Image 1: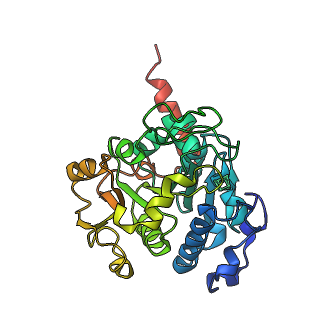
Image 2: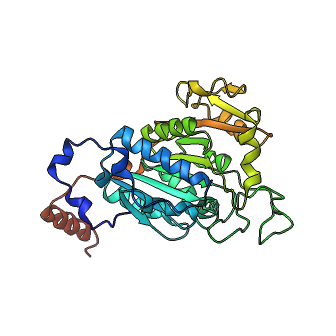
Length: 318
Ligand code: SF4
């Protein structure tokens, strides 16, 4: 992670011509547990940065608090390791002030779906042109195993040792229910080709791309995704030219469902739990208003601002 005031801002002019390699994006060695799905997600993100040749000084990763929130430390871009649940408002501020930057948000399930839930809903409605990743392992891992809003019912934790009492929040269905949602997708950390293709689709979407990454936590919730990882028959791939198409997965997964991501009603239907884990783009709409464009105002000089202010005050003259 690099502080916003540091040397990346003064990148050499030669950087315009420079070709960025994977090594240019790598920062501190990741300290997640062995086997943690976050490692694979980090690799997928680094591949995306290299493939898209995103200049590190024009790229920002914002996180809240949790295992996933270490992300900015492991990337040699700008980064903001924020406070719990507040990654999206921080990213909103950055994007509004510097709309030309590539802004990524990395949240955990507690971060996004609990303390940050209000920000989640409104960020989706604002539809800024950013990528928002929810790394969902169904547990508070950093604080060592408490039930989270997405813990499947019956999964034990320190706070609910007899198993989670409530049915979990469904992040895909919840996001699809928000006004102005423009891109909603789901992928899994154990399928690097699908993960990468989904990240690519999200990056190229114009608007807020919400991606739920099913993330393995071998430390506390190995039961959640291990079964699906070992049995591809439990997974159904949503396929469509406007979604995610990964030919190399054709032989591995026999369940594939054509789904046009333009169909919101079908997306909502597919998001409902029915025993299958669905991966792919549920919904995509490039026509939704993007907040930083909707509220953009023409740059004004100081004297123009003073004149406008004077005219406004004159309206109240008595
Ligand atoms: Fe990953 Fe779980 Fe370890 Fe956190 S506790 S680093 S989520 S394996």
